[in-house]
Amino acid sequence: MVLPVMLVRYRPGNTGQITRAVHLVPMPDRHVAGTVGTLCGAVLSLEDIETVNSGQGMPCTMCILNQVTAAAPTLVPPVGSPDSDDTGLINGVAYQAWAWPVTQHHDQIRLRLDCDVSAIAIPIPLSTEILQLLTARHCDPAVLAHPYTPQHHLILTGERLPAPLPWPPGVHQITGTLLLPPTMTPRGPITWIRSPHQDSLHLSREIDVFGALRAILGDSHR
Image (tube, rainbow, N blue to C red):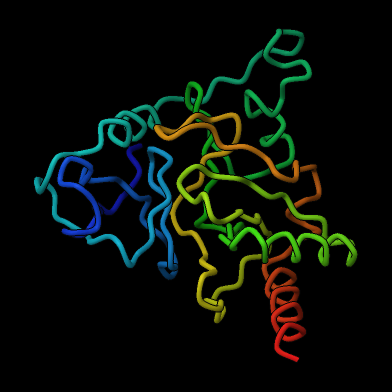
């Protein structure tokens, strides 16, 4: 089954014409947030992109290939094989064992953001403070560094709320899909700043991250 997608590319003037490839974004089942994740692994701000119709522009080859391979069955290494030992994070078996909404196709591990999981892009200095506060509150989150958002860290949360929260400027919720380590993007690897564990998405909910953010920003304005 081919994933339903919307077609997006950079707006004129935001980048060179050669990089205005048309990317594929999984069709969200709820609202579209401030940032979208594409099938090739790019993370793009809605302010910088436009939607296009089929046949417009040059398609992103990686997005097309990943859409095609998404229709192929996921292969789980047999127990006892080298790929199923202590490299669970590499082959995606651990994510699946934790019941994370992931699919694995070849070397790409894709996290769906159209269900109860969300990813919040937060400027690194602010993210560091939030991580410390969440840890103190026993809401230990999983945190990513992504080459497409070098000024932000991505905090993964569970229990995504049905309505969008009023995130402050500079903080964005990602819509669509997000690639997980050790997937390689065209701009480099995605890496863990705070490694995940089985209960990461249960301990750190979207409302927990929002509450920590409000607490930190409130203290800074006193």
